Image: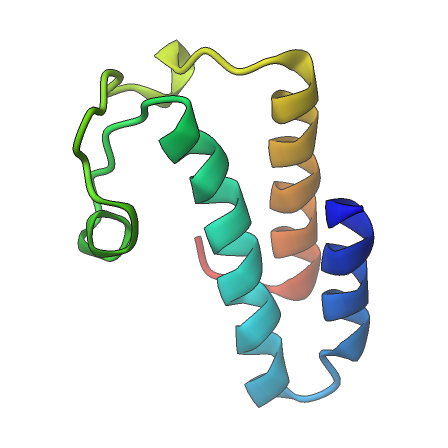
Length: 87
């Protein structure tokens, strides 16, 4: 279901201004997965959005994600790349 919503958002991005919205949504979806898994964010933007309370992992490679979560993150990253989102 989430994947369909993300795909629909990308399909609606017809203008450069509209493209920022899907990028923000994709960024939020991707980082919410990392937050739930205990990642300690480094960027100001992510810390403001998610905080670091209760974080456990400083390195993304150490974050314990399920196969499904890794596949979701990979799909989001692909969509960010296709949409020209800055990462």
